[in-house]
Length: 96
Image (cartoon, rainbow, N blue to C red; front, top):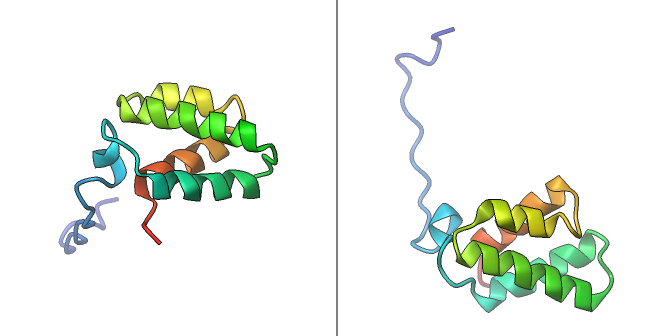
């Protein structure tokens, strides 16, 4: 049960000032929204208006530091796994 004792701690992830949980409450860059659009298309949302609306609602909630509201809005279009995937892309997507 205590097999982790005596082992070295793994190094902390080096995330930038606007990545991961640090990105909540800040503006989401356009390159992340474009990547999110591609992910939504891959997840089966073919209507561009639905994709735009979903990204806009979820982004607005994340920019206002409201992850539960973002999850609720995402689940109007996606299942729970898709909602988490969308939020991850919006919070951590890298610039191409």
